[in-house]
Image (cartoon, rainbow, N blue to C red):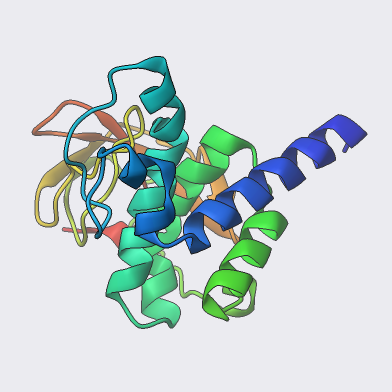
Length: 194
């Protein structure tokens, strides 16, 4: 790994951590009237200054922050965040190690120390995900926008021979198509049921 990559990882990690741990009312998006005191979007940014305070990176971090604020931490919680965390990892280039450090500092929990159980039920012998339609077990963000529009119990479609697009904390992540919106999203085996 080159110096530039490590530097970029560190910059994104600290930026992510700073934004994740900043109270809603102290963020630039709140001060500009883009979000409310609970992080809910009031209006979309219009000016370049507003867009610098609320862009795709902010949206992703704010979605994770809202999820972190909702649930107690443990094995199930980490499993429910994997797809969202992978989306952040892909968009920012933050490594698993840096992301784990950020989560440990923000929550006191080290996601790498938790052994998540993988179900082989959905896997073919070559470790591709079985084709078909599945229901989501939780709300998930869309890959393109980061908006949480893929809601629990809605259907996703898995194409034939879907290989992992990557992994986060040792868990494979797959691409799926949300049937209602037609948008691509990332899932883990923890996010689907038949």
